[in-house]
Image (cartoon, rainbow, N blue to C red):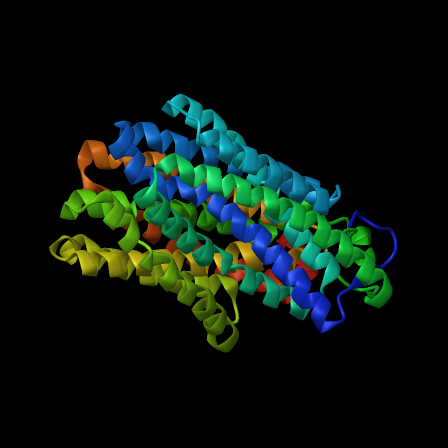
Length: 435
């Protein structure tokens, strides 16, 4: 699946499309197991090993900072190199880092291993989106990107379920041994599955000369439009800000929910991990609710994102004033917040990059937005640990509220330039030059 001068073969047969989707789904699903297993185990690691929250927060931050930086690189590489091989390398390296975590004896070792894990996992999503755009029609690609978002709640649920069962039967180290072995098997499945599908596409695929070609369209070449200028004109600067802000809440809330429940309501760590499994179940609703509202009512990724930022503001306001009175209410409100962030992630990270198909920058834009999402996650993982230790959970909740408000404002201000760009990218650029 390297860059080609001629037309690419697209999926045409239903059985090939289903096989392609499930290989991709399983592959990306396993990446969540290979990074959220630490978040799900963190409350138990703190209890068992006596490490501080801030020390383990550095481990999670190491992964997300490395993941975010790696996304910028892999996004560009995904538009240049063979994306199938990039994904295979990422999953394989990540599997070995997970195995290594089972032997880690200090937070320092964990930071090193988990940072490399972040770099490895950054090699997966952007090249995978490039494969979608190369091998699917537009409608197939949009549908697949939405359905791929289900890997987040599914991976989160399975990560917490795995940790709950394994820790109750053995210890937290066994979680990483099992995950590492599973990921190694999935990397081999990916390589074999994609190679097989390439052969099938040569026999049964359809040819579309107009599609998601990596090269810019002829009219774009003549106009001299640079990607940097389109980045500004399309409002991608503010969209990037929204990606960063939602990333702070997306992984921060899920990661610290078990610890939050343990400290606020004084429950057992394993029980807090178990009850947190409701969060990814509710998250699944966010994926399809966002897609439904976008297609039926809003017809804009940005308006849909603004709606879910507003919903988050309301949820966090209720949490700030009444959440500490009821564990069930707190869990519901945190689930709503997490679900809204996944809805925004579906719009911003999965669908917004598809608007840049004609520029041949799907992987690059995906890398930029996914990078900023996980830079936000890195800030959150460490920042929440420090903030909650120094100032308590009340101050932390107000910080979450302020972040949601900033995200809402970013979506409001970017609406007009984004709508103008989506209607006619070239005219939007010309207007900006004349202005």
